[in-house]
Length: 104
Image (cartoon, rainbow, N blue to C red; front, side, top):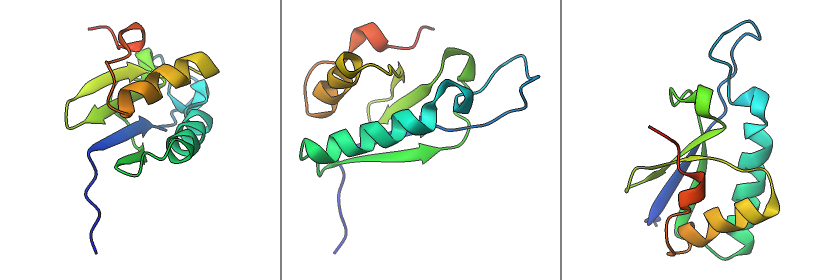
């Protein structure tokens, strides 16, 4: 049986050298945030949302970065519970969490 996901959430966990001027999402706790988001989505019963680890999404300067497909919404992921709740509201079918949208 194949699962059909309504949304895929890709969280950058890329790690670069500390000397890199671009920085990296891993140094901004992206792996911990990914784990919390994945657990929270499961706890909310969002069985049609898949949260995945991703390599470089080429936005580490604005990270920890995340992209939600199929819509292509880019977020700078928050670490706080309130911010995480806003992202979850979007994933549950609510409005985009505009306060966490990645700038152009």
